[in-house]
Length: 170
Image 1 (cartoon, rainbow, N blue to C red):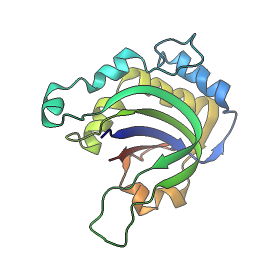
Image 2 (image 1 turned 60 degrees about the vertical axis):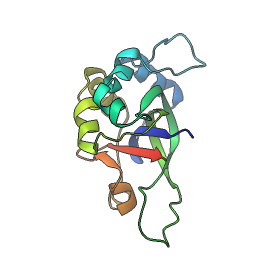
Image 3 (image 1 turned 30 degrees about the horizontal axis):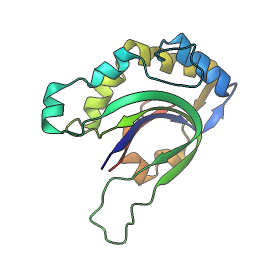
């Protein structure tokens, strides 16, 4: 069985001048792609992948997250956390908007959402990407998304105009 997870940088309103080509330019400018000349592949740069080289986490979880790519798209498919509520079918949540996604196999345990924020969002290349996205595209995450409890439960950081969401398909 394989597990698929992703960290999503998301906004759904007031975004301007952001299309696939300009989003790719941001990824290239931030050196987030392993091979910027390869337009068929969005392999994540090694120094970002290495953030997850955590021996203790891998010892605690054989399926610890191994990111492999970063992409831009117009929809996020999020998987809600497991619930004890039998009526909750755990259906995916679809968010339409602007999405930068770091994805790969495995899941985040034993890291908490705070660990993800501390370790990933503080990386200089990720900081630069967030800055360039805000500078070039503006935008923000709308209040209905910020108030959706299923989405709130997945948020890694919602302190800015764009939000970071961690989703695991376990």
